[in-house]
Image 1 (cartoon, rainbow, N blue to C red):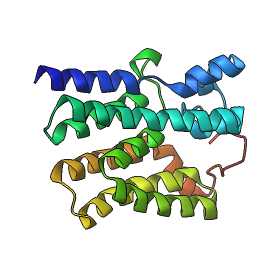
Image 2: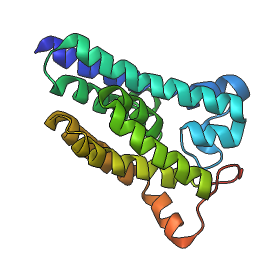
Image 3: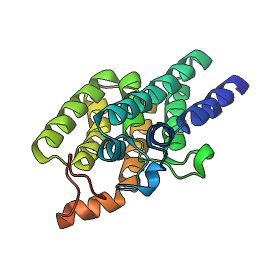
Length: 199
């Protein structure tokens, strides 16, 4: 039990490493949360700093999710532990202890978590999300579709209850963190990919 708790705590601490904040500070000496959309994530890094830093943040944030789930698998054979570790990493990204609990929206980390826990559901949801982004250029819409479709595909592929429960919580996180984006999507004022202004 102690090892499992430590695994969850470690996953949160890893998730709390906000690579967008760190890289923006190193590359341009700025706080990414004070520029663009104000979000500490890959999409805002792309808008503010360009493709290289944006891609780097995206890959590193995915890596946090993958690492957290793997820590859970190493710590325990209990199917709930990798799920809890993945959730802890997402919570860390959204509310990082190192940066006054003001982080990103957790989608890239969610991709890493879901892809490691349930690859095929993540792949199917990811394809739909990518097509949506390619057609509409709304990253937020693709992110929400990914979060919404993942638990559905987990049921279709008959994955375990812990994975389904975890996916539902992740969906809730995604919609809570994208509240303002949902409003802008409905109003037609949401930023499109490639447009360098606040989202």
